[in-house]
Image 1 (cartoon, rainbow, N blue to C red):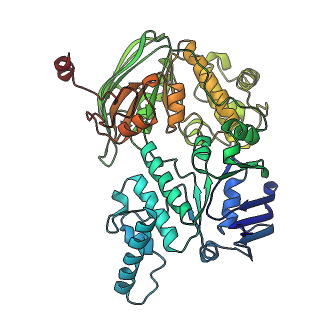
Image 2: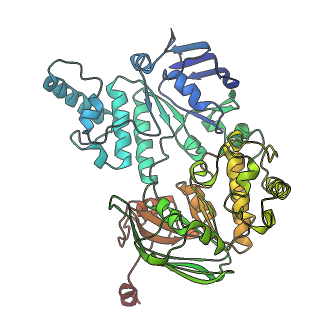
Image 3: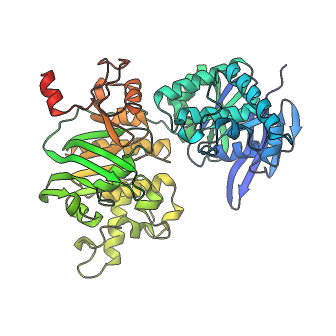
Length: 535
């Protein structure tokens, strides 16, 4: 019988009192794509870091192609034929593709000779596996999908026959994801073994042969992908049944709550981050903002919540606080924005929403600590604790200990605390950035259900997410951003991932021509003159 490409036996790893990997057994057969799934903190990354030599197991064995190896650093892993493509690329952006691939592997005293041999080897590998990319291109000027190819080329150039991919699609458009899967198919067909770490069950079902499921540091199950389902995998990951779809009724949009006109913003270096942004938001609807991370969505959220001011543009608000018009010269700060009926769940909870050293009770009133319900003249601890207990109960924050430091809560419970703080105020406008980033699949279900409930109670919700599944499931309307501009607007019920992916790589005013969506192409922004001409 063929020996497994990778066999892990009784792997254990502790970090102080935390038992990150507990008696892990795993077999990965050669020439297969093997998925590893699990909630955050399940131990997936620790296990792969042990395999790649970043960590050393406390106990256990690693066998590569049947040979027992003691892998104590990444150089030993590379020598054993193991390569790893990290979620955040390890590339030198000012260098060319060829220079990045060669880095650390020059191998000859005369660099010119080494470059010539490396170029030939790179071309052979690229041709063999369908990884074509210009060897003389500057890496920093390449789109993300091609940068990822460079990372894979680096690993193959170093002789990798076993390739670990850590959340490889987190920064890719749907089209780039499709191209990556074609590459993985080519690698698999030519005998390369791929270990795929992802939280996207749809991708597991689409590309893997086998999948292993981890929970709380243990390996709980192994499945042939053809004989399982996303529902079974989710239940194995969480330990209970999980509703993977978002159950909602059609939106009933009401009054306009926000109108954004010609919003423009350049950062301190003069880089134009937002370009003539225009949209509106109504009560009783969720407006999704789709796009690859870094295309202006973060700046837009910060601006609408008062953390940044635009160089030009207007925000018109109609809320219970009355009618307001904010212009570039009279923008409001975050506290004043809250008073106008806008709540904000930031993209990065630990940088913008919470203070880890504070207790849950202190964080539960952060930004609202001057409100009379927490004390008329001074903060009254009993009122703060009582309010926190209500929030924790309503949003199932565990453990229900208002005095516990926020750093001691899991990421999902930290996120639920932020959501409770903002959403229980029943704001007229709710700005939510990456609501389920770093959140376990069970908490995702809970968060989505509460977002829909807020919409149905009349909140106008602006959702920013890089997860297209999330955007499509929750949104009623969708705008797409690329390079700081809105490149299209579509109804969620009339589009799909392929169509959104085209808009994510389009420029403002450009209409995608592929016609992949149910409407044959998304609507791009038009000027008033263009709309009149069409009419």
